[in-house]
Length: 225
Image (cartoon, rainbow, N blue to C red; front, side):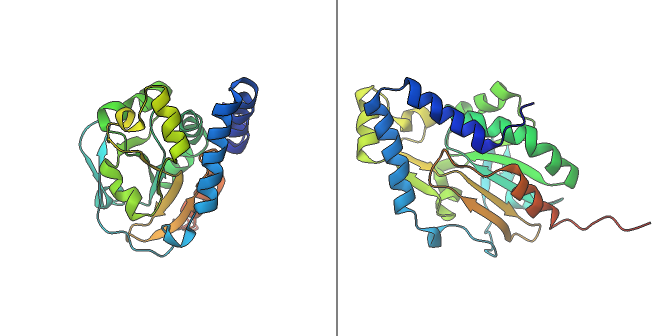
């Protein structure tokens, strides 16, 4: 198990790109992330205190995950990520397996990683890393849109993908350029948001500690004997 923070792990990914990517490709990636940060509208994002209306996610193992089922025994922690092949997501999700999932399980919270990618293509990231928590599809970005965390790639990014004969909508199975920004949302048993953190830059993501602290604050301490 690595003791590196998520920030350190993602910084190493960026450093590798600085060393190995062609300057033009690197510029497109950096510019896209900078534009998303600049264009961010935090007022549109999900916030602490919001009431969450019912939703349905598709478990990659089959079946539905509803708000009611996810919060039946404790808080739900939703981690929004882009898609199974996203390099930064392949760093973040194993990090959450190591540093977040055990603490949440001990508290009685349910952790779910959420992407718009269709279930039959999304399950590979769970298998690749042996993730013990749920991975689910938000079909059509319905919940991500409701939470105000989706974005569409800029023209330069789209053109670069097309030049390679690629289209993210084919990769995800959604047929669109729309993806979620990395976000973590904690929902209590009454259906209220108790923690929300959104990052327009997908190389910046929420560390485990603040999530654990937010969930612990919702859980009554054991009675003194």
